[in-house]
Image (cartoon, rainbow, N blue to C red; front, side, top):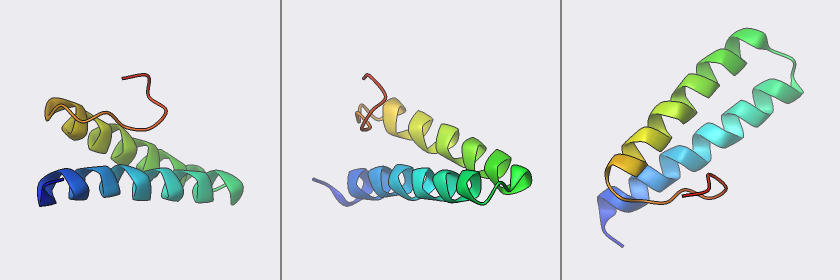
Amino acid sequence: MAGFEEAALERVRVARVRLRTAQEADDAFEEAQAAEELEDAQRVAHDHGLATEGDGR
């Protein structure tokens, strides 16, 4: 797998962890930011033909 693809998928993974951590901490502000980052990371991955785990693609 090319470096860009690995980085894009890692970005999705990190964003998911950040979102889960914010949810567990009941931190609404951090959760909103993490959700936005995850959405953007998934969009970039999908724009480059990469399937991300658990998104049905």
